[in-house]
Image (tube, rainbow, N blue to C red):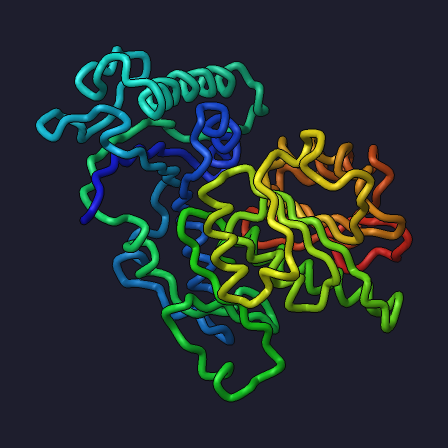
Length: 374
């Protein structure tokens, strides 16, 4: 039987979506989606020479639309009644009566806190906290009652594609002809996204995969025959990066995820890719004592998060980097390049490669290697 959800959508911009991520997390929203027409432009523009095949004409008509950040709350948890008026926009600062029962707690508290937190973000933008050129769009909030299995609907739009050279992503409900033909030139990753971020279609994940392939190649070139590669994936989401590292022969892979729903999705993906015995999946905050094994170091540390989270985590993660190791950092906007360079330099690391797609960039950084292309 289908469940009923309250869908909450915040209308913003690409820049605003990046800033909203930590705001929503502080409100207790750990799983959300970002619909950005820039991503669709990337998909359409990359169609030649790849295997993108899921661009619906209705979606193409949506290019140029504002960025939408959405999350879902169970109807029973927020106390919404079937006869109440939910459609339309939440007026930030209003009492929001009619949307919630009194004293619901849990997700109801989340729904109450989000408009207030977004209002605070609006004030910060107006006060210049994000710079004079910051454009976060309207930051208006829309709610809609969804009586549907939205997870299944999202899966219906996910098909086999190639996010980077030599890599094919496919859902478990589809076959890929090259796999049946024994094409060893492609690394095939099976992903069922479920509640997690990271199918490979977003620029940030695509660049992470490209950077990870380069980092593994660098490591093998520097130490031929060395099979001791140790990888830490911070914020693993669907597990896609950890799975790729394991399929490429990493000896030890540790994947950390703070969101239990995303971790459950990752655990299923490890199993369907046959790497569950090669990856240690940890649910928790990577900065909390006891989450990572004491004293363990890693040759590659991956983090596809937000600029603020990356800058905050970098000093602690730097202590986990083995001599000669490398970082792969993504989730960064072009405008944040200088900030991440400064954070890396403060940790004694140099930028080896910059990867760029649209407004996004990813960084491969480390020590002991000559810089590559920019």
